[in-house]
Length: 294
Image (cartoon, rainbow, N blue to C red):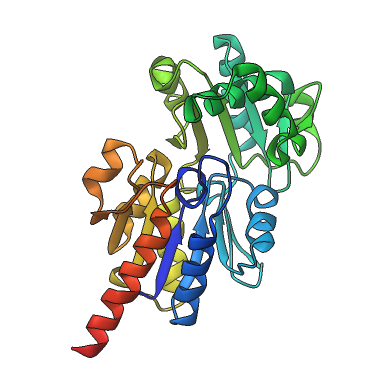
């Protein structure tokens, strides 16, 4: 019997237009009406994800920043796993030396030293997802997206981290060449400290504290609510979802998921452009009903 469904955002609940379909919204509400808690697990910061779900009339709990922050349904912060500040500084120096564009993510903000590079990276990804879109059109769309507009440009990451009270929750690194571009730098980052290094798209890596993983955060949250592992379902598409799909009793891979996620999942649903989350939720509700009837 599934009591908790945890769902990734990008590439999973969101379609390629970065929207939540009505079919997905209604399925989430059906799950909640059937006594199943719905939880979003995202690499995004709270301000990038939580208002979005509210816009669609969905109240739920959140794992943000890949497990860096965990919030209950009432919005109370119950877990915080920041990077060590000295570790973050060493990673930043290395990334600059290696010529990578990257951003610092705190609990409340995303910071960039060069916002134009972020817009370019998002535009490349949009063209990849929507081949009919020209790069120029993608740049215009990218520049107007809330996730871009909300990023704060700063003159220096070093100065930002020297400000009292600054906590770096995640470092997000981009390269339009794809995952192979990160192979060497990941090895060097791993020499700095014990970390969680994952990916939410072909063009990025996400660096978190070792304890900031979706899977562990999910299990900790469930345990606090008296929910067993076999009573959890997790839906995702990319490498930063791997830990939660392995942790859950029922792991669900999107039809558009990377092969590694499909391999470890209990079953594969439809793609994010085909209401795959709704399909998975309805299957879970039906399976719950069958179990109750037995």
